[in-house]
Image (cartoon, rainbow, N blue to C red; front, top):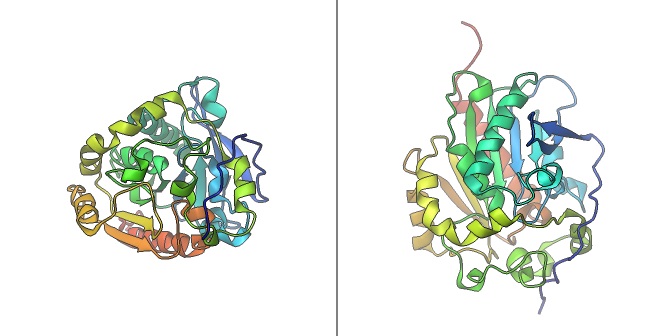
Length: 308
């Protein structure tokens, strides 16, 4: 029987892949770091904003073990710019926000940072959000921020969430520490789901969880329905077959989808042979391809900004 690895305890520096640059979003005291990957030629078709999970960092989306699992590489090959952002309290902003921010305030700061980014940079048809785990919580709040949609710079095309549900599973109810050794099975699932060397390499991805974010963990089930109801863009949700953090029976998944009252009922998928950390697993290319296919659907439904 396979067992989950012990969680790495010491964050290290994450190598930045070729073709990816580290940039700063926003101005003023609370600037955010991000990894940016752009299409090789031409203006982007959209900007995909990838939001990392609890105790993670942007390298999560960059295929740290197997290049073919990189969301950044696949999305840019299809003509999109990717911004893999550092959430407030992580990375660059740790110095000015040592306690981080509550989820809703994280979303407001990210919204301002993206508006600032759109001023000098092309954004194609608009922004598309992809959030993992606790980053999905922030992305859900971000989708509920004002997006007037009158121009591509203020248009939200869609929201893709993975590993982010409503009610915690009994095994997760004590909220084990990702940087300790208590969350290994919840975060990973069976070892066979990941390329060899994943767990050693993942040490470089880990970061300390800001206190303000940690304090909100237990409050999430009470806040999810209202956050979901504020979303107006199309939504897609994915959970790995071996997801351990969330209750995922049929009634629960139906109730999750029903909370999105401001948009069409979202698609909810269970991905076979996948654990919680979808973008690090062998199923990553399939998940990323389906997320980007959803982005194509959102682009097809977006208003045209061509004159005439």
